[in-house]
Length: 286
Image 1 (tube, rainbow, N blue to C red):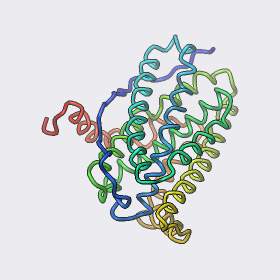
Image 2: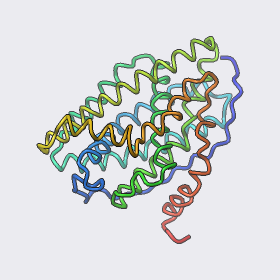
Image 3: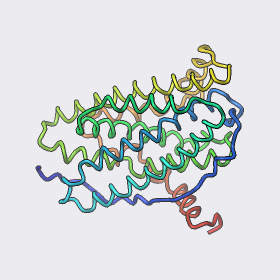
Image 4: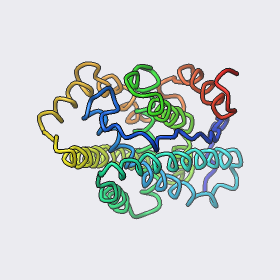
């Protein structure tokens, strides 16, 4: 394997925080909005199989990275953060299951989608792509600061913590990809990662819409008109989160893209890093 020069000096701490969502049973927790609540709930269902997929995809290449001890340390931080995300979203999803939602079938849908990606290299490329999607979510949430302002504190803290840590490790899988594809041509590497992002974006949003439908049908309130109205308002018009995050998302398609430099989000992350580091220490007043 050809040696690849990469910059590895990123702190990726493992913050073990229990967000205690187990006693929350309000289906309209997100500002009284059933559809926004269902969107986040459906996203939570995706995360445990998704995070396990990310960990397996990167861990597969650890034996090939002996020459990169600092990157291996970052990978351990990445896997530690993802494992804790899995734990917290499993608790979140158990609450959804107890509320009567068909969580097992919804989760299996995500498992089946990910299982269609067969080769280790393609799995890594999809991990890189999905990490960019989660970093895009993090960019929206942390830059805006008001996305979860109408949510109860436990939900607001959980989602903000998750977004912060996605931002902190957003380039780890990409660095692994650069190393293991070093013998491919530049255009082959570029085409593979871009195709993976296009397919991953379509697949995850299709799964999210279907899972939202299942949640809302369980409650007897599903309507395609209301679904498209929510997508138009929150995705496109006002506040238009997807529209506002579009430059960040499409930056991935620029040759030479580096996730560590995308978005210039370090200053945005610092207040949240201090906040959640205090939570780990058990004090909000440090």
